[in-house]
Length: 328
Image (cartoon, rainbow, N blue to C red; front, side, top):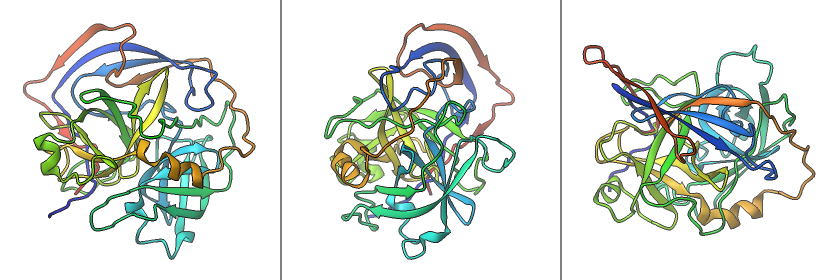
């Protein structure tokens, strides 16, 4: 069977803009970087993420160059995909994470924190030939967590309980390639809205899903929005019970944003026991100081609170399409 691995998101042509408000629960230790978030919804296409909108997103780097994404669980642990690490397990000293920024090459940003990786735990049953059990835990020296650090932790789903249903909106973020065959990494964090597919659907099956317990598919029926190489290991998120939950980890796929070929994601709820056994959630954590300002995030809504159409944009002559990356 032929496999193609992470590469891209398409931004195209028509934008239908809505506003939706998300209010997170401040009693939850994960999420809640901003107590109130106003989302500008774009029905078609990916786009740049607002500054500090996703405080748990970090860049996994080799020799200070971005290779994959990762999601902060607590101040010294992040979760990512095993696929991105299989060639460097004998030399993890070249690995580091970059946190506190949406922009990869701007060292003047005061919130940036960088840490060397001190341990990598790949899933013991990870299979590089099939990309099954594509998950790994990164450990590093604790990041400084405060109201000024602009960092947050992604919430985890319950063991074997999906935080989404088929056709639910999910948000993917990453710094992946902008085009499938032009290997240019996005320097700015980007985001895209996709939907979960049934694992038995024709499109999901032909993309190459092998195990519906450990993997699931997400994309759009018409294509045009996806993740691509460089987005690998980044989060696919669901908004559930007033918090952002890590539903999936960008894993693999066929092409980037191709019609009829959704992306394949690691099914995080299946791996909660693995995560809990390798992350010390009981360790002493610096208390996150709640940030009370309102943040505006350009993105399609996943849960409607106050929904009202505001603008329709269509350019018939100068439609620009580009990929938000994630596969090959």
